[in-house]
Amino acid sequence: MPKVIIGTLLASLLLVFGLFTYLSADDPEKYLIFGTWGTPQEVESFQHLIDLYNATRSLKHKVKLFHPENVSYDQRLLVQAAAGNLPDVMHLHNENIQAFVHKGLIEDLTPFVQQDTSFHLDAFFPNLVKTCTIEHRLYGVPHNFSTLVLYYNKDHFDAEGISYPDSTWDWNTLIKAALKLTKRDRNGNIVRYGCNIGIILFTLFQQNGGSFLNETLDRCVIGSPECAGALQFLTDLSEKYHVTWNSLATGIQWDDMFAGGRCSMLTNGRWAAAWYAKYMPQKSMDIAPLPRGKYRVGGIATHIMAMSASSKKKEEAWEFIKFLVGKQGQVMVSNDGNNIPALREVAESDLFLKNKNTPLLNNRVFLDEIPYARDWAFNPGPYLTHYAISQLMSLAENNVLLGYDTPMTALQKMQDEVNRIIEDQKRITRGQRFLGSKMFYLLCVIVIATVFVAVQRRRKNSQLPPDQRGEGVH
Image 1 (spheres, rainbow, N blue to C red):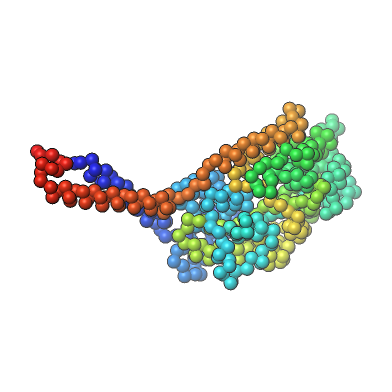
Image 2: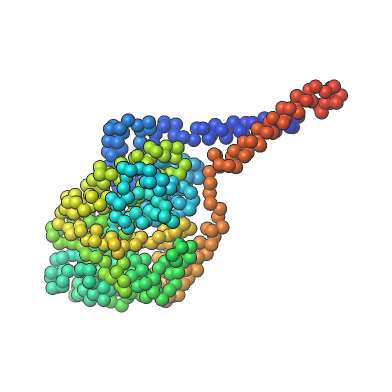
């Protein structure tokens, strides 16, 4: 058989295989897939919502829950994106939005909002909507959130005659209170620490006038005097004032330390409130705003509902997103007690303010912190991952604690490494789907044209005398 015929057949098989893959890429069971993570309780609540949604609506595609076990949810989504198989609706953390938009993985929801008169963005807290917005385009809808606050043990404060924390507290106030609250045994060993605020380090940078990235999120600027001053303050809490433990300490769980009465003040989010309320003595705990530095800056973690850019069920996905962020979905968030509803109607009602999980807590503080809050722990931009930066930050902290570097030197080294990573990532071409792309259709046209030319040549060749055919005489 001539080589041209063999090549034509192979090209045809490739075309058939590609078209088959393209046409069968949709979920074979025709579900609308919803991807999420969370505690068993949260996943169970989502399943109840899905069951309600499926049972009370006439749907072309029933909703099906996707919840990967024992696998990093974010990494699993990126693997699925490479395979062109993302869930139609995705529950995402705000730290992933920039990267997912940069990779073209999530849909611009601006047209859906503009065309849907039943949906109103002003029903959500403006700061939350801002975390979903890139270059004036909306890429998700806020679902739940948590601001960072200062948890404190009222019994400890009462015993020392210290006034409870409030919005006037600054770093110096924190140090003075922590010194009084820190207790030692007869041998000088610390048996109760005054505070631990390590998880808000990136917020401390901002409180001191510094920043992790520049405004365009494509250059690290952490090696500044402002950030170095904030790292020095955090280091002094353990190494100078001895009112907390440092990041080199092993086997210490800050939640256990606070709930067990061995730490008087702790920075944390809403997700810890119900656990503390359950295991601490009644009326012994409350919350206050974060102590301020040069500026009053807080932290906020936002979870959003986004739509896959590759979904073939976008209108249905939008309807399901509206359900999740609507009254029924938001009541579920409040009832779970681990996060705060993004819908103002629910968050500002007794469902949250007098939440059954934390009835004695001043839950209003979580809402009062919203106007001052910025992305927590930080906005990694389109080129970085939260995990990689956290590892580099831990290295910088440890080098300072061990005396290898000053805060300024450690952060400048980190800045150089982060900028190297950013430059490397900029060189990577933005990934695009092959099936359904312009290149895919161009190759289809080329294959079809090749087949057509080969067939015409074969037909013309068959009409020639045997001695003039390319096949030769046998």
